[in-house]
Length: 242
View 1 (tube, rainbow, N blue to C red):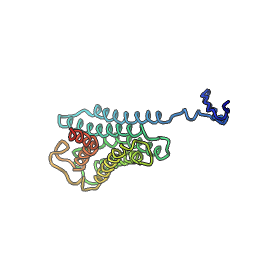
View 2 (view 1 turned 30 degrees about the vertical axis):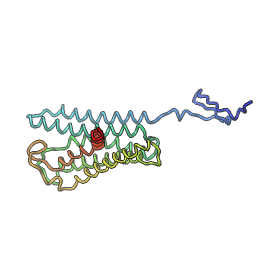
View 3 (view 1 turned 90 degrees about the vertical axis):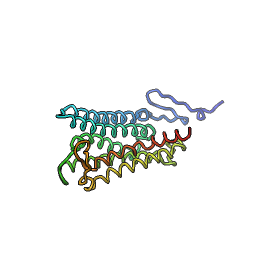
View 4 (view 1 turned 180 degrees about the vertical axis):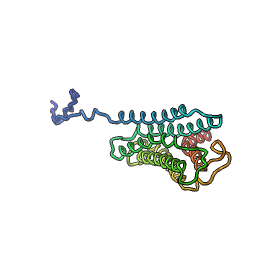
């Protein structure tokens, strides 16, 4: 006859579990999964950030075709950045344990920065005539710091996945996440570097897209190939293997 201690019995009734040694444990805290709630909050924050940008377009009626094109191009810039971060964040957090204190802090900070992004973006003037120390200058510096910090946090979260000792992803995916982490670090550094005054003083002819604009905005545009670097590299490898 089997000993009762050698038999594992799990009784889920009322959130209580009877273990193999007869002890009773309360599992009500295990059933409470915090990840779905955090993901719902994240979706809400990202959705609001995108919606605020669209509302900004509606509230500012363009006076001519040039302003219309400029407004749509600016919104497209903000939209593509936020949506790419959202997709990458969702992929990372589908694997990462959100219960870790470090992860929770990074998540909270990221959500704050994403919520602030539409406000800073609406302060940007893509064809400014003001100099250093102006509101346009400070707004663009704040926007660069905000996005640089977002990508730095994304790099930190991706770095946790890329650790071999963590065992969070399959070994054959470690190189992929390390490449993504490096691209996110490079993107963050680019945004931080553009806070240097020279990127505001020097302008390029042709504007953004009007009549002249600081090279700070053009450098931001250059981050898109870096952001999409992993996808571009994967497609290139597929074509090369055919």
